[in-house]
Length: 176
Image (cartoon, rainbow, N blue to C red; front, side, top):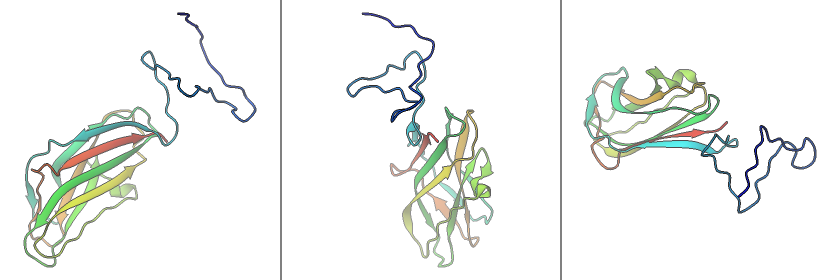
Protein backbone atom coordinates (compact mmCIF):
# COMPACT_ATOMS: atom_id res chain seq x y z
CA UNK A 1 0.00 0.00 0.00
CA UNK A 2 1.28 3.44 -0.91
CA UNK A 3 0.75 6.63 1.04
CA UNK A 4 0.52 10.02 -0.60
CA UNK A 5 1.43 12.93 1.65
CA UNK A 6 0.14 16.38 0.69
CA UNK A 7 -0.54 19.62 2.51
CA UNK A 8 -3.41 20.84 0.34
CA UNK A 9 -5.61 19.60 -2.46
CA UNK A 10 -6.99 22.14 -4.88
CA UNK A 11 -9.29 21.65 -7.84
CA UNK A 12 -8.67 23.23 -11.20
CA UNK A 13 -9.69 26.89 -11.33
CA UNK A 14 -11.58 26.70 -14.64
CA UNK A 15 -13.76 24.32 -16.61
CA UNK A 16 -17.04 22.56 -15.78
CA UNK A 17 -15.65 21.21 -12.49
CA UNK A 18 -13.87 24.38 -11.40
CA UNK A 19 -12.80 24.44 -7.75
CA UNK A 20 -13.95 20.84 -7.16
CA UNK A 21 -12.09 17.77 -6.04
CA UNK A 22 -14.02 14.81 -7.41
CA UNK A 23 -14.14 11.40 -5.76
CA UNK A 24 -15.07 8.83 -8.43
CA UNK A 25 -18.24 6.76 -8.07
CA UNK A 26 -17.66 3.71 -5.90
CA UNK A 27 -14.84 5.40 -3.99
CA UNK A 28 -15.07 6.96 -0.53
CA UNK A 29 -13.08 9.35 1.60
CA UNK A 30 -12.12 8.19 5.07
CA UNK A 31 -12.55 11.18 7.35
CA UNK A 32 -11.32 9.40 10.48
CA UNK A 33 -8.24 11.61 10.58
CA UNK A 34 -9.97 14.91 9.81
CA UNK A 35 -13.14 16.73 8.93
CA UNK A 36 -14.80 16.71 5.54
CA UNK A 37 -17.05 19.73 5.11
CA UNK A 38 -20.51 18.77 3.89
CA UNK A 39 -22.15 20.52 0.96
CA UNK A 40 -24.91 23.07 1.41
CA UNK A 41 -28.22 21.39 2.30
CA UNK A 42 -26.65 18.20 3.65
CA UNK A 43 -27.51 16.92 7.13
CA UNK A 44 -24.46 17.30 9.35
CA UNK A 45 -25.91 15.57 12.41
CA UNK A 46 -29.19 14.57 14.03
CA UNK A 47 -29.86 14.17 17.75
CA UNK A 48 -32.99 12.40 18.94
CA UNK A 49 -34.73 12.20 22.30
CA UNK A 50 -37.64 9.91 23.07
CA UNK A 51 -37.23 9.38 26.82
CA UNK A 52 -39.56 12.25 27.71
CA UNK A 53 -41.88 10.75 30.31
CA UNK A 54 -43.89 13.18 32.43
CA UNK A 55 -47.05 15.26 32.49
CA UNK A 56 -47.10 19.06 32.54
CA UNK A 57 -50.15 21.27 33.02
CA UNK A 58 -50.70 25.02 33.24
CA UNK A 59 -53.53 27.50 33.30
CA UNK A 60 -51.11 30.41 32.90
CA UNK A 61 -51.62 32.78 30.00
CA UNK A 62 -47.85 33.44 30.07
CA UNK A 63 -45.41 30.95 28.56
CA UNK A 64 -44.05 28.29 30.92
CA UNK A 65 -41.27 25.76 30.38
CA UNK A 66 -42.47 22.24 29.60
CA UNK A 67 -39.28 20.37 30.46
CA UNK A 68 -39.33 18.91 26.95
CA UNK A 69 -35.87 19.93 25.79
CA UNK A 70 -32.70 18.71 24.11
CA UNK A 71 -29.31 20.11 23.19
CA UNK A 72 -27.18 20.05 20.07
CA UNK A 73 -23.65 21.35 19.51
CA UNK A 74 -23.48 22.64 15.93
CA UNK A 75 -20.34 21.89 13.96
CA UNK A 76 -20.85 25.03 11.85
CA UNK A 77 -21.92 28.48 13.08
CA UNK A 78 -23.76 29.22 9.82
CA UNK A 79 -25.77 25.99 9.72
CA UNK A 80 -29.52 25.73 10.12
CA UNK A 81 -31.09 23.75 12.95
CA UNK A 82 -34.40 22.05 12.20
CA UNK A 83 -36.35 21.46 15.43
CA UNK A 84 -39.13 18.83 15.37
CA UNK A 85 -41.45 18.13 18.34
CA UNK A 86 -44.07 15.37 18.32
CA UNK A 87 -46.05 15.40 21.59
CA UNK A 88 -49.55 14.53 22.88
CA UNK A 89 -51.62 17.37 24.35
CA UNK A 90 -55.11 18.05 25.68
CA UNK A 91 -57.09 20.63 27.65
CA UNK A 92 -60.07 20.91 29.97
CA UNK A 93 -63.53 21.19 28.44
CA UNK A 94 -63.85 24.78 27.34
CA UNK A 95 -64.67 25.71 23.78
CA UNK A 96 -62.54 28.85 23.95
CA UNK A 97 -59.35 27.18 25.23
CA UNK A 98 -56.23 26.81 23.15
CA UNK A 99 -52.83 25.39 24.00
CA UNK A 100 -50.32 27.79 22.47
CA UNK A 101 -46.78 26.39 22.09
CA UNK A 102 -43.51 28.19 21.36
CA UNK A 103 -39.96 26.95 20.87
CA UNK A 104 -37.22 28.61 22.91
CA UNK A 105 -33.47 28.58 22.26
CA UNK A 106 -31.36 28.80 25.44
CA UNK A 107 -34.34 30.36 27.24
CA UNK A 108 -35.14 32.94 24.54
CA UNK A 109 -38.33 32.82 22.48
CA UNK A 110 -37.52 32.07 18.83
CA UNK A 111 -40.58 34.05 17.70
CA UNK A 112 -38.56 37.20 18.48
CA UNK A 113 -36.34 36.12 15.58
CA UNK A 114 -39.31 36.42 13.24
CA UNK A 115 -40.83 32.97 13.83
CA UNK A 116 -43.99 32.18 15.77
CA UNK A 117 -45.96 29.03 16.37
CA UNK A 118 -49.44 28.35 17.61
CA UNK A 119 -51.91 25.53 17.99
CA UNK A 120 -55.61 25.84 18.68
CA UNK A 121 -58.13 23.20 19.74
CA UNK A 122 -61.77 23.48 20.72
CA UNK A 123 -63.60 21.21 23.13
CA UNK A 124 -62.12 18.47 25.32
CA UNK A 125 -59.56 16.90 23.02
CA UNK A 126 -56.53 14.68 23.24
CA UNK A 127 -54.43 14.95 20.12
CA UNK A 128 -50.81 14.65 19.09
CA UNK A 129 -49.19 17.93 18.13
CA UNK A 130 -46.33 18.13 15.64
CA UNK A 131 -44.39 21.36 15.76
CA UNK A 132 -41.39 22.30 13.60
CA UNK A 133 -39.18 25.35 13.60
CA UNK A 134 -36.10 26.35 11.63
CA UNK A 135 -33.36 28.24 13.47
CA UNK A 136 -30.93 29.79 11.02
CA UNK A 137 -29.73 32.58 13.33
CA UNK A 138 -28.01 30.67 16.17
CA UNK A 139 -24.50 31.64 14.92
CA UNK A 140 -22.80 29.27 17.37
CA UNK A 141 -20.68 26.15 17.67
CA UNK A 142 -21.43 25.90 21.40
CA UNK A 143 -24.17 23.70 22.85
CA UNK A 144 -27.67 25.03 22.18
CA UNK A 145 -30.72 23.87 24.14
CA UNK A 146 -34.15 23.97 22.52
CA UNK A 147 -37.20 23.69 24.78
CA UNK A 148 -40.93 23.67 24.22
CA UNK A 149 -42.80 26.34 26.19
CA UNK A 150 -46.59 26.61 26.25
CA UNK A 151 -49.49 28.60 27.66
CA UNK A 152 -53.26 28.59 27.88
CA UNK A 153 -55.08 31.08 25.70
CA UNK A 154 -57.91 31.55 28.19
CA UNK A 155 -56.65 30.67 31.66
CA UNK A 156 -58.26 27.21 31.56
CA UNK A 157 -55.95 24.29 32.21
CA UNK A 158 -54.01 22.78 29.28
CA UNK A 159 -51.79 19.69 29.36
CA UNK A 160 -48.74 18.30 27.63
CA UNK A 161 -49.01 14.56 28.15
CA UNK A 162 -45.49 13.51 27.29
CA UNK A 163 -45.48 10.20 29.10
CA UNK A 164 -46.17 8.05 26.08
CA UNK A 165 -44.16 6.44 23.33
CA UNK A 166 -45.64 9.05 20.95
CA UNK A 167 -43.41 11.78 22.39
CA UNK A 168 -40.13 12.63 20.72
CA UNK A 169 -37.86 15.52 19.86
CA UNK A 170 -35.40 15.64 16.95
CA UNK A 171 -32.79 18.28 16.15
CA UNK A 172 -31.11 18.28 12.74
CA UNK A 173 -28.10 20.40 11.81
CA UNK A 174 -28.17 21.22 8.10
CA UNK A 175 -25.19 22.85 6.37
CA UNK A 176 -25.92 26.33 5.01
